[in-house]
Amino acid sequence: KYQDCTPCPSDSSPRLAPMGWELRLFLSLPVSPSSTTTAPAPPPVSLELCGGPQPLVASAPKASELEARTDIYLEFGEEALGVKFRDVDEHGSTHLLEVKVRGTVKKRGAEEWNKVCSEPLRGASLLEAVRRAVPEVSVTADGSKWVRLKKQRWQQDMRGAVVEQTELEVAVGGEGREWQTLPRRYRTICFEGKKPDRCYELLGNWLGLPEDWEMHDLEGALAAHAAGVAQDGPGFVAPCLCGYPRFVSAVLASLETLCPDLDAAPSPGPPPPTSEAAAASDAGRCDIA
Image (tube, rainbow, N blue to C red):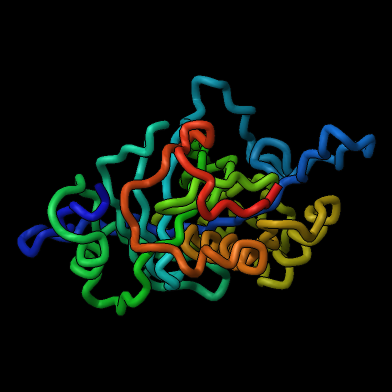
């Protein structure tokens, strides 16, 4: 159970090595029309690594190249702190708590992330584990708001950097509440490298931005590609350049009026099963379909 996890890293454990620079986008995909409506489906979003305005010489990924994984993110109200249970199975079981801390943030959005904890769960409370992993961060929230992300990820080394495209199925839940899957899916695209300039160059080439592009150039490109996507509805998050913690907080914020009980969740215990059909109770269910 999540209440029984060993603080990680332990007092004698060295911190894990820096992960490098990330330049990550989150994009909303069109909501599939209800089966009861005759309205035509919205046009597909073309903003992807293998079909953008300037493809990065990338071939469409084969099924064998896709990584499927489910992670549960816990929101602590701090976008520089990422906490998740990694690789959760269909029964809601996991053995790995992962904590990341954001360092420097560049003016064009590149973020430096360090993984400070990646340990099996045993021992003390979840909150104590997070506080010991990041003693320099003031952790006040209890992490009782959960967002489950079912991921289908593709990565490729491309001209000196790793590029990633991941499709996200988003659900919200927590102890005593079954998972509620949002009708809207997301895509995250990320450029990772040892130097942020290489990430900027690849992003600019891909989107056809000026050589020394600025944030307003990127915002214009994202707005153009989001024009065919409905900008409302439960769980809508506008296109953003950020890390997973900020995206998770934005998803929860978009549901506050629809699911006010998310703010009154109990302290984290074992997660509900990842399959909605396996949940034992409708307690705390909110209608987000």
